[in-house]
Image 1 (tube, rainbow, N blue to C red):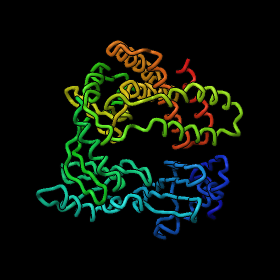
Image 2: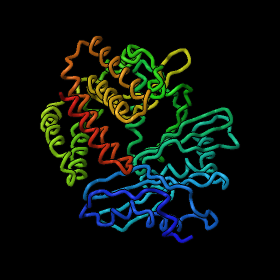
Image 3: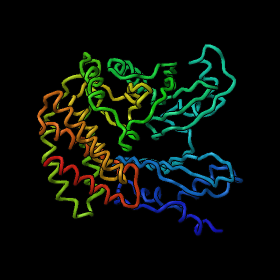
Length: 406
């Protein structure tokens, strides 16, 4: 079977507006180019994958674009998934890297390969040396971070890999997370030079899954624990504040670029920007906050306690922005999830919003603005995790933002 005939079934080619300073960008979404370039990095006996999935699209308009892919094989071949990253930069040639090679994350390759991971765990974590480590990739965002699961017998550790320059702030955010009322995984060890931090496994049920099944905990339990984090002391001179303006304007620039040929979206986007621009310009942090608080960041443990498993954005922020972010994710899930999950997300949205307004006495309009700006940022999911209908998903998300603004 020829390459040209086989490739189209691997994934649907996607189209994004041209970036004049990155003329090679379309190649990253061309199935034939992708497969031909990946073949050079794979053993000859691997054959053809069953599927190639696009995982992430990170586009710094006019400067660089990164696309990550997952290759899956037929079950009877007993081959693990392979992960690749293709990069195009304004200055420089196209580059293809096979996971776990990532020059921005020098600790990733040692932490991802079982033999090297074993040495690291024995050196940095365990008091009694182990003989074997099983490594599982949980999450990977190229150039930015990765989460790996290291299993040593019955001991389960999660290795968080970040850029070495981000390690000290990451560790500081972890320590601040312990000021909250949530259960936080225990720190098992760290390797600062490689940007790797090991946390003990916390066994529980994902809160997002529970919400979608209609089995979520009372929102008051979340609010009481989050409130303890808000009461933590801050020192703006030592802890940079959450960059809301930067994140908002990056999203706005992306939407203007990607929807420039989609006339129906322009009026909605302009209306949203006219409302949010003054709010974002005037926004200031008021206390310590999580800054990325939503359902997929938490687990419910046996006995009902709630564990917080993502914490790297804890910094001076805004309590209402934390709740607005949670509400924004619920709105997005309610829009795109199937029934009855969508209805369960809507119900929890109402419960959480009412509980927060009642507990803290907030102004509902102020909370709505924060929900809207967070939902605006959540809309980048349509581009960062692209599908063939990404324009429709993005337009639907922006309509939700407009609804939040009233």
